[in-house]
Amino acid sequence: MDTDYLVTVKGFASVKMGFLASAPCIGAVAGNMIGGIISDRLLDGRRKPMLLLSGLMLGIGFAGYSPYPMGLASKSTYPTAFGIVNFLGQIGGATAPPCCAPSSSSV
Image (cartoon, rainbow, N blue to C red; front, side, top):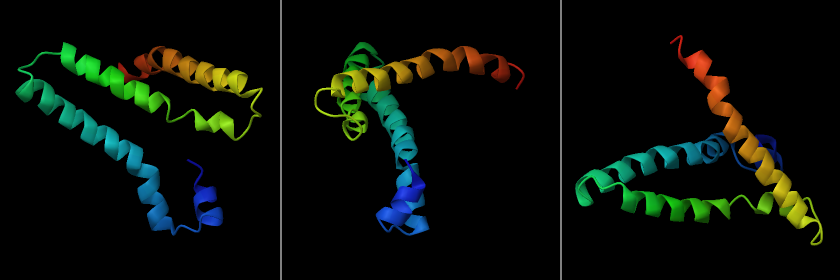
């Protein structure tokens, strides 16, 4: 999230901008805790229903980042732009564990 955009274009105060920028992380922490409670207490520790629910939520979230290339591409080039955004996200997800694992072993 570009903080300059929120302040200059949308007119948010820096405190409000900070809350908006941290909202995804706060939601992830809350979702992890709520998911653990649901899995352990309501589903008696069964993981398959939670995996199914997580997959559904991932599908909904996947549609959430698709507007990014929409603002940069025309209707005819949008599929290619979406593919590039997806590709770069997948590369980041694939390279992060090998890159971060050596640094975390020394902790």
